Image 1: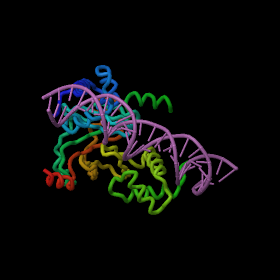
Image 2 (image 1 turned 45 degrees about the vertical axis):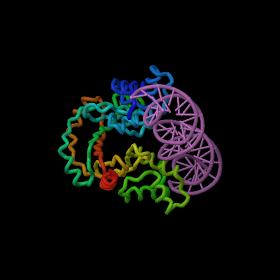
Image 3 (image 1 turned 90 degrees about the horizontal axis):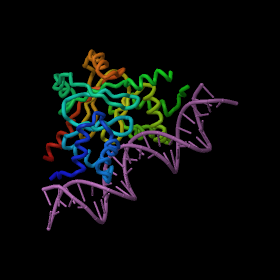
Image 4 (image 1 turned 135 degrees about the vertical axis):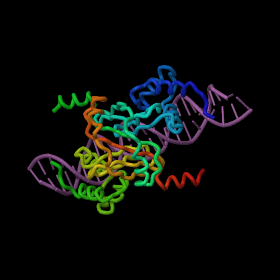
Length: 131
Length: 131
DNA sequence: ATAGGTGCAAACGGTTTGCCGAAAT
DNA sequence: ATTTCGGCAAACCGTTTGCACCTAT
């Protein structure tokens, strides 16, 4: 089955230590420091494998590239609508509403994603300076 | 300022009546029935203009194309992780937590997106049949 | 030995852009 | 008359894929 390769190990270790919800490209840059020949295609292949295994979450964004997020604890995200920066928020919303939503939609639900959207401190400062 | 063109009017009217959170391509197909020469590029240009005006929301997905959603009432989404189908959920979550999240993240927040993820009835049935 | 994984380069799909002509003000 | 808008086709960018080689099992 799934083999333990240097590429996979390196990527997992980077995902574990990264706090920035990196893009595939960011991860690739970091991987290259340890495995100078590793291709971007391999990063993508690993990311989609890990995603199917449930080891990571893919966060689609309107800022081009997807962000990747290792699944460790339950948490939500604050996403900057200007630059795409993502900050974690501890999980503090009960999933009490789940059965209500299931009744409403007919879906079988297994994950709630709560996404706050607004300006991160950086972009807020820049926006003020420009206007 | 913003001119009132046939293309813009048609697109807005389609967005208002569509209940399916259409992709740009779906919208284009429908627009073509009324304006046979309208280009896909125009649909994209209008969508991004409308998005900046705050008239619509862009919903990025991991299923390729973005979905577009007219902003009328506050609601959230149930999104099928298999086929990407989106169903509306009435807003029932207080925004009490906002200031707490702002303190935590330093963001200035203006929107909460709550996204339930799971299998829509269709995909659940298919999944059962295959396993 | 043999799946399964990887590198490379080419293909892909959704979206954006430059250019010029058309249409709304 | 002016200036925004739209059509077309080409470019773009993130991601995926086919192929031949490699490597963990």
